Amino acid sequence: MSLIVQKYGGTSVANTERIANVAKRVIRFRQEGHDVVVVVSALSGETNRLIELAKEITETPDKREMDVLLSTGEQVTIALLAMTFKEAGQEAVSYTGNQVRITTDDSYGKARIVSIDKENIQADLKQGKVVVVAGFQGVDETGNITTLGRGGSDTTAVALAAALKAEECQIYTDVDGVYTTDPRIVSNARKLDKITFEEMLELASLGSKVLQIRSVEFAGKYKVPLRVLSSFEDSGEGTLITVEDNKMEDAVIAGIAFSRDEAQITLTGVPDTPGVAYKILGPVADANIEVDMIVQNIGDDGTTDFTFTVHRDEYKRATAIMSDTAKRLGAAAHSGDNTIVKVSLVGVGMRSHAGIASKMFEALGQEGINIIMISTSEIKISVVIDEKYLELAVRTLHDAFELEKAA
Ligand code: ADP
Ligand code: ASP
Ligand code: MG
Image (cartoon, helix red, strand yellow):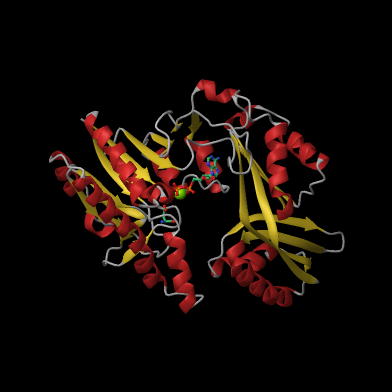
């Protein structure tokens, strides 16, 4: 009997009717001869609701208690789904992260999975049960509840699939696969049959929220075949995330990702001396703020202008730090902007094709979209632009690179 791990996201378990549909699909897989472990998210909107509740008390909730709170969302779903199975005559058992024992490190809100006890799950499967596991949560070594970061149920599913050596990890969601870009932004975005782990990881890191970054990392590292499918349609093979094959190199660009979570900070007229980058970014790192892009321009008067981007949520803190830094370094001025976004082209085919960047810049220029910052790597090009151009930029690039057509 082969084992499949299936994960159902929030919209797929939004109410008891949809939960019943999930149970039906799982039972069908059982009848086809598969063992199934099901990972579920909280009911649609529930995690946001819990976050808002905490915010009614404080803007800076205690991190440990926040994880205790957020983990309740998924606990509701596992119980409802397990009841639904039993009602339908299918034996099932629900487990929280703690009950499985999904052990994580102790970074509340963004914990990493360290190990998974699989003995109980294997014994249950042997007895013919469907095992229903709460996504997004674990427990640290001293027994504190942890959560894995937004979208973390994807990672729970892939980690379980890796631990149990499942044949496939299937991520059921509200779209029928991974598209060339978010189909909510570009209506003629094309569903991909396959995409490489590397490209998917890049897309996820650059803002495509269809899969959590860590789930793709895990799948790549442990070679778990990963598939994104619709929980609302029965047909279709979805998108398989897999290792690179020759055919895939035909497509230069796999997709376009974007992130609205960006903000930039600039220091101008900083005396240009050795160690200045460290003096600017050291305090930012000490405050545990992640810096993404960095641009430094040398002026001809012995000073330098220094710009970097951070997550929009960190904009206030980073600005406060820069105000101190500017004084300390004798910078002429500091400024910032939290109305910027990042748009990125991703594709392994870029390695062997020149001219992608210039085509990208030309297309954006023709639409009057000003590029504020650029960063490139072997398989991606990112630009920072004003947020008001986000949708136009994504559509323009999708058209310019003809992503609606199969390679
Ligand atoms: P779930 O609640 O099932 O985890 P998510 O909202 O996390 O679902 O992920 C699915 C959503 O990801 C889709 O509704 C879609 O809007 C968005 N998305 C962003 N980029 C892409 C892409 N390239 N392909 C498909 N969906 C994408
Ligand atoms: N419920 C969590 C969230 O909304 C985890 C998940 O859905 O994957 O982020
Ligand atoms: Mg998700």
